[in-house]
Length: 138
Image (cartoon, rainbow, N blue to C red; front, side, top):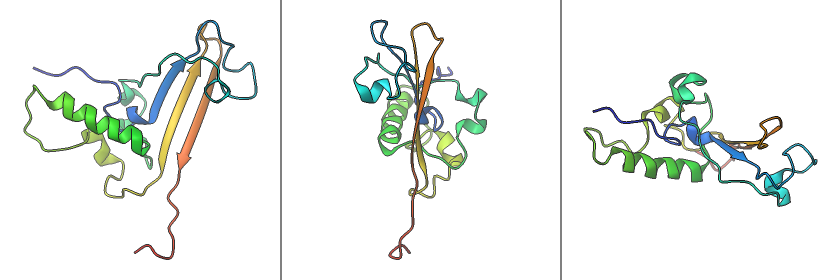
């Protein structure tokens, strides 16, 4: 039996969140500040499933999800593996192998797409964390 794909499981999916503003709140582009930071009502966010259609090997080259998103992905992967054929001891989805998994201090990204109920307006928030080496690094 093959398992169904799961949102937030792959490295690319863990970098992307999609939210919709509630019908009662203003559209995402109606003010200069974002709905998520200005108190606008956002419906719960979700992560995409089929990221392989946009990102080869389900990884955004040179980027990893934020630490929190990666931890959620790890928990999801462990839960997803249970009840199936588990002949692997991996802690993360195989897509992480293509995202410089060997370097835990690499750049991290969170992409949040906020759409209006009509889908006529959209706002994209991108937060990045770049690793900057110090003199104390080996």
